[in-house]
Length: 67
Image 1: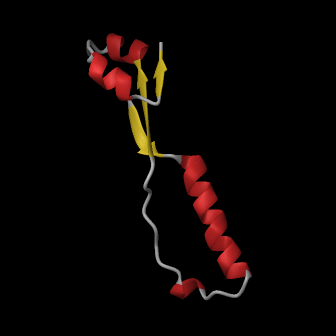
Image 2 (image 1 turned 120 degrees about the vertical axis):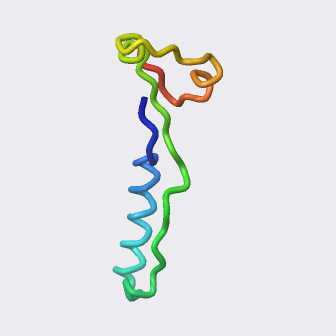
């Protein structure tokens, strides 16, 4: 199971910050941003190997389920 930031969204937001800097904004004036979108991946084969049963409710919330 993996839960972390959505990297394509992070890269898009980083590009926006870089664009601001290239247009003359001072890097020190740009606020630090925290991730707002996250990605949940569940690996059922790994879960089974360690004796973990993943509830269907959690599987429905997952962005990706690896069989």
